[in-house]
Length: 479
Image 1 (cartoon, rainbow, N blue to C red):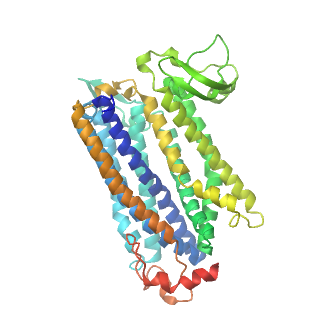
Image 2: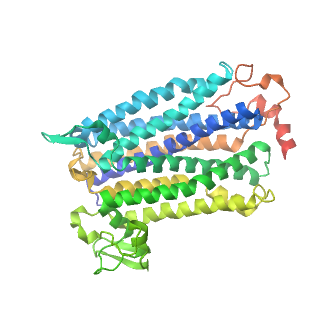
Image 3: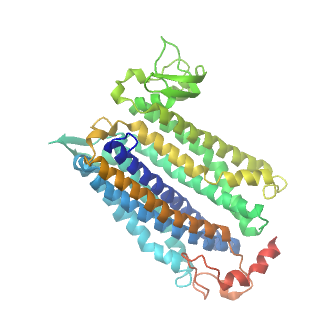
């Protein structure tokens, strides 16, 4: 297939499935915490705008959560089908870590999810809020174990190799491996930023269509405050993560920078743009800034960064890909910071909700967080190559050895099924987003919240109901 080998197709298949999957947990992590904040603010302030937003986003959360669970199961099976040699080699580490994720995070989420989604009228306010918080905590615990497992593959420690298999000797060292704290913070923060721009884009879309009410404005305001605060923090975390990567995976940093060789004792320049050529062993059309590479990566003006030619050709990551995936991630990060600062400037005079240039910017920045996450994962995983467990097991030795025909058929099937199934799911979720939050009449005592009679929220239903129609005049009243 296109001159590719079975191993290449196995890698593409896993990359394809994980690229679909990671989008859903990222939004799930962010929305779960957002819902907990919304319900907490409603309980504290009794401002029904927060309650209306909670009901709106809980529906989207439910659909997103379901797609995340389904797509995640497929990935778990791939470890046994396509990467059985890896499972045999490192299963004593990765198996328990993924089991801990199920026993702690998934069971916690599953135990309280039903109360959160369907218990608004069935349980007291405090219990319902506690359930929402537990679901949010569960998503973060899940992130903890998944990132621990993946980080161990990047910077393995706390083990011995006995009879060709990894045997854990220090579980604390396994879980809290050198790259884990940085990667956990980077991924969790990325999820919050991605969700903020998803929410902010939704609000901008409604405002551009003339749907202006307190709930829409609150959505945009909360999203932009989150972007303003968290996007710069993410840049700082990324800097620390880069220093950690330089220490433990210098070949990855060299590939990211497109840096092939050091010249004498000269500091390393930063290559802004160029085209790393793996065969020619140089970065063509390079646009360089002297000294800046050393300053960013070593925090000095005289230290050099390891170069790709310092490593054997068979141990070099594909610089052509990670050079550009990293720049996509960083470029979007700078745009996120700019958007947050732009929103802060427009808050003077209450212009943030009416400035069309800003609203269009917020709208088009909607998928930026998810694109940045994908670019970051491509950088991390492709930059680890040719190792599946860094320094211990090569990717070529980890596959199950299926034939080219088998991998071609299964890859095609995955592509068709995923685009059909999850494409429909994403379309359904966008339909929910287009409906927007419903402002309820706070003068009606039947809309008091948990513990009082109310039309149950239907998280998996996008159909119009009487409530939407009955209160449409309130939305017009807010315009």
